[in-house]
Length: 356
Ligand SMILES: Cc1ncc(COP(=O)(O)O)c(C=O)c1O
Image (cartoon, rainbow, N blue to C red; front, side, top):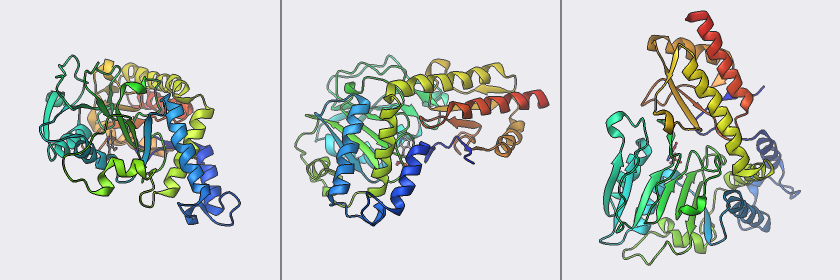
């Protein structure tokens, strides 16, 4: 039996993708060997890479002027690769500090150039998304974290930027039908809405990169990976294959637009229960509530271990909040069925009727 998987990442994947992946581990494409054993230079794997790249563009409604890369090192390596590749001497990058991941991105950018923090919700424990801040026109780029996985806040609308926008979409890519064409560079660790850990999606708009005025290690140079078609070195073959299976599932289930409808419905149900139930409360500004990571606490915080235990006894996994914030976090990514949200809502109601 599958559990109700509310893990924040690595997280739940579509069952259809898991079933096909497990077959491919045994034998891939009738080749007499496993996907784990084939050469990344084989035509069978080239077909995987090509289709995965095309499906990224298709699912995000982006044109082929965007380059799609499947890299390693997690989104955390992108925190450094972005400024390393984009900032030349004298350039300034603008960042918005919306929590742990944004702070890490800022820390890395400072190693490579001048950074300006244009806005921050640090003062209120990152419980909201700053709005209405000025974006100087002389910036090389503006960096945003689309969804703050730890705090449970998400941009509902992105700022209108006069400069190129670089965005960390690790925890909400493919979850909404936003205009992805407003971004110049998108990056995302795969292990939430896309696939297993071990691969990072990077999408770069034509014309964003320029000649760098400093030396870049080959592996940390976007140009290397564009020229090598994400195969300058051995790519994470199996992780990319599972991404392909998830991307096919996404396309076959109506793409980001259909996911948004379902994700909005799941989130609305859960937030409605948090607001209605006398024992629970939300932790972030209502207008910035994430539809991917739903954070909440109990009115009586002493009861939190008991509720967590209760959910575990009822086949729920991963509901504890991030170790830095506590409370609860229900991650309700694309592949999480609505029935899992219904199950959790039922448990909250049952706990209330027994304990309130
Ligand atoms: C928004 C966001 N950015 C970056 C990261 C770091 O990703 P990785 O572990 O792939 O380096 C995470 C991980 O959860 C995240 O949620």
